[in-house]
Amino acid sequence: MVQVDPRPQAGDTVTSVGATGSDTRSGAPGDTSSDTRSKGLSGNSVGLLGSAVIGISTVAPVYCLTSTLGPTVGEVGVQMPAVFLAGFLPMLLVAFAYRELNKAVPDCGTSFTWTVKAFGPRAGWMCGWGLVIATIIVLSNLAGVATSFFYLLLGEITGSQAIADLDGNKAAHVLTCLAFIAVATAISYRGMTATKGVQYALVGLQLAVLAVFVVLAVIKAQSGDFAGSLDFSWTWLDPFAVQSFSAFTAGLSLSIFMFWGWDACLTVNEETAGSAKTPGRAALLAMVVLIGSYLLTAVASQMFSGVGDKGVGLGNPDTADNVFAALANPVMGTVLGVLLFVAVLASAAASLQTTFIPVARTVLAMSTYEALPASFATIHPRFRSPGKATVAAGIATGVFYSVMSFLSENVLIDTIYALGLMICFYYAITAFACAWFFRRELRNSARDLLFKGVFPVLGGVLLAAVFFKTLMDMWNPAYGSGSSVFGVGSVFVIGVGLLLLGVVLMLVMQRRSPAFFRGGVLTRATPALVVED
Image 1 (cartoon, rainbow, N blue to C red):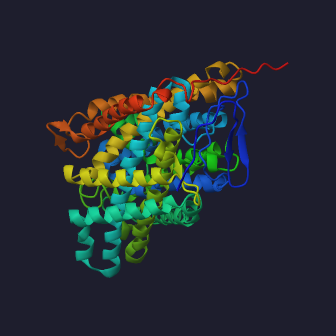
Image 2: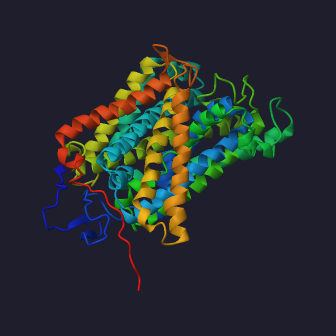
Image 3: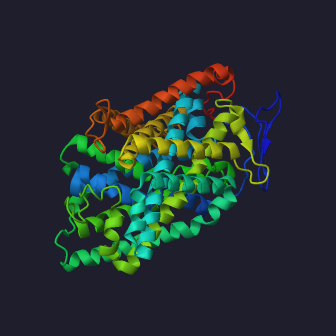
């Protein structure tokens, strides 16, 4: 391991040396990225398709669907497709903000770096913490789903119910989760080349199996052989048909979770060919693929199963955290049903690997800019990856999941709800940061006004509204799985407790690294106005 010194000397230019070239930032007047620093990552390692595949893989569409279809139906019933569309809208608006910020400051710190430059070090630090802790939460859930489907798949292949039941053994489950986390950490530790090598096949497998599932579910639903099946209705796409605003925001929080991860395309911007434009395009491409696959699967599942709370109905609380486990054989049959188990396992395992990308690179950037201890800025000399940051993320994930497994019997559902809170938190701050960062450019053109101002602010407002409404709702123990801590909903304890932990850690770092918090390392900035003759 080598320690890359991120601190340029007075008068120096900042040079980022990649695999095939260098990017020198001279600090010329109006250059808003002049104080950004080299991280030592491998440049030009990912193209447009590879970046989009990483974004899709990080989201883990099959995993998201199996763990979210049930809870969403439980909140909004047949309006599930409408809520998915509603969740897509703020994400799309925020994606425009990410694209514009990346063009101006292509830095792997993304939300952290951009928020510091817009609002200052403390807001930026908390935004970075929101991203980091959201990633730790989703990594723990990915490991949990991978473990569940690992034992279910073994049970299907061997025909042994005893093997399938091992997932219900808490000790065996947690130990297997830790093993998955360790393997994923080791692969991510080896850098982008190892990470992207298997992602094309795994993402292709997920999308192909989903396509087969959708076709078979629709065909069987229309056959009339299943009592719970429903005929498709366009009213399913009407968000105003949801019974209450509280139910809508709860469903929306889950829907937003289903799109989380597309910004991994941006966190590899320093390793992407055409770092200013390619990551933003890749993020939008990933979003289109995701919303298409989600809507088709939601409609097909609802047509086949209905929304009842018995049997294979999507509203059955006994199958809510793992819908595909119940639907695999009825929809796809014994042989093809195994493919659905494989797809969920591959989805969770692949995302478990790629999800280390945003957290490791955010921690790397925060360390490089002296917002975290300098040791996390260590880059592996061969793999050009943030080695210590990756290992730290793996350890934190393992500890978090182990603790939560013994605190809450429904840790999977509760942490998904808490994750929605974290996602709204840091995405909303980033969206507002975009409008403020580009505030002097908003009158330049209609395009600048819309994509740098109106769309980001609208996306930020929508996410902030969901954040505060969810914050109020989750105080009730009935929110989420129904578990509580001293009479307070466990989702509230998880979400708010982790945000407060971030405040405490920020105050500790403020004493250890006063230069960053005085604004002397990464400075506030806005693009300079360019007056054309």
